Amino acid sequence: MNFLNIHISEENRKLFTEVKNFILIIVTVIDLIFIFIITIYNVSYDELLFMSIFDLFVCFLLFLNLITIYRKSDKNLLDFIKTHVIDILSMIPFNFIFLRFFAVFRLVRLISLLQLFQIFKIYALRRFDYGSLKYFVQNRLLKVLTFILVFYTILSSIILQNIDPSFTNFFDSLWYNIVTLSGVGYGDITPISTEGKLIGIITIIMGVLFLSIFTAAMSSLYMEKPEEKTRLLVKSYIKHLKNRNRSLQKKVDSLDRDVEELQTKLDEITQILKDNIDNQKYEKEEDS
Image (cartoon, rainbow, N blue to C red; front, side):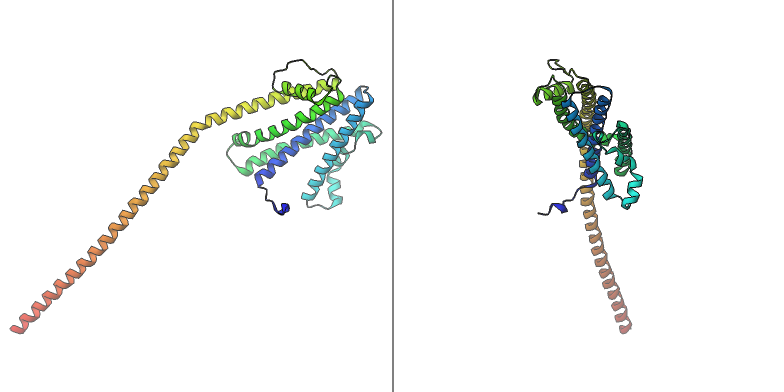
């Protein structure tokens, strides 16, 4: 089987692009928080090592994204570099530069990603033209946020395990994220470091956002059931009318054929009568 020939629909391609942009936004935000923390506060060697590795990971993702953009563009390499200077500078890891001034370009890159996603979302709605934002919320946004939520939960759990002393293993940090996202918040495990608290704030916002959208989507689907039932009844009635019209049309066609046959027979009878009258006239003339 040739996997290179797998067809990806336009809608799934756009869905994948939205997910990719969401992931880049999340990791870039977290990386900017780390850069800010390293710039303002004194962190331990282990925390600095982890943040440096995470920054390299983010830079690698930005590099892959830039390569993808270049492959889709029709510009040569030099023109592409000229128009994507900020993107290139944003890929520079903070632990390889003198000053952390270039982190500003990472922030500009984040703003560009946010603008890109907003433009892309508007374009997607116009491209598919399904009527309103309702289609996007019910059919795409929930899928995107579900994927992003899973990705964020795993990523933030790994980060918390490495930067906050309250979390001694991955399960503890995962447990904290799940109860925080769900809005329960048992409080048996809480972050004590500044970095951990910042991630906790993001987790709370993510949980509220996801639960709100999930509730709205489920309510919308529930409200759609009567509409769907009515739609099915209308379709069934229309189908019944079409079948009835076809049946009536067949009867009309049959009547037309009968009328034609009767007309033909009537013409034959008329012709026979006419011939008889002519013959009678002829016989009378001969007798006379």
